[in-house]
Length: 102
Image (cartoon, rainbow, N blue to C red):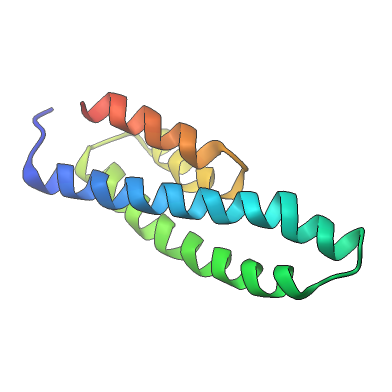
């Protein structure tokens, strides 16, 4: 597969969204949710939760664009789309995409 400018651009957008979405998910999972459920401080969850939800929606669009431009299989596409929902998975997906694209 040749690395066209369109594919490189799609990867750069995916990389940015994978890092941003993954970071927000880590903040939500390991800081905001414990603050809410253990110490009864719901403010951070109320802020970070919707932000992560919005970012994940953008991440799905960007990840789908990358997988279509790279002509990846449906199975790989689904894995990349779900990577924004599992802590640390979007970072792994970004690294694997970088290795696949070159």
